[in-house]
Length: 233
Image (cartoon, rainbow, N blue to C red; front, side, top):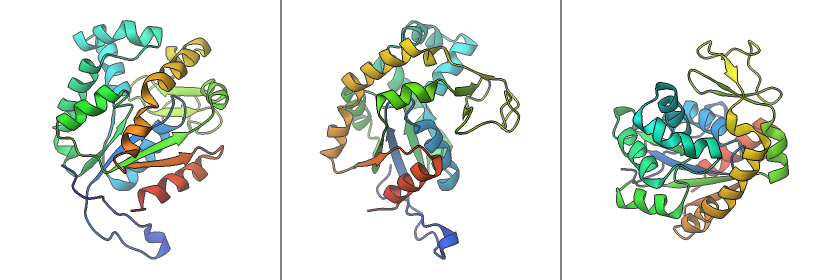
């Protein structure tokens, strides 16, 4: 699916896109580390879709689909949605035409078992970026996070505010505070991340795919660091 990396150099620096190759990217990082925001930026720059299971599941919850009802109890308690549910979502999504030139996986895989399942499905990954932010900073950061109740776009009251206050810039939906941004739920989710998801760094490092980015207080600085590792070999 993704034999080579899509190499992009900023045209403003006097360079051009060198080759039309696919970027098949996994973004790792604790909840609140900024994966969603960076995924949006990368998606626009490389013209590839972001596959966020969180958004897909929230849509299923809103529509009360069988998948949404199955996942609801796990999400409400801050636990991870079971692997078989996640993998079925990803498998269907990657078969859509907009993924033919590459994709970004944000929020999946979350466990070694999910990563192995993706390998068994033949999903080839050529970059894995882990955004590192201390837990205490994440807890403080999430208190200001807002999410569109229609399209799922992410905002922050200070770091990435909407131009229309409590209204989404993209679809005019209402911006809400997610249930799983409650401080206790956040702490539970961070523990789950460290126990179950963080081991993926070793998994992908052993494959020579992992790149580490230290999340910065200024969004543009983190974006610059992410861009640097994406353009590296």
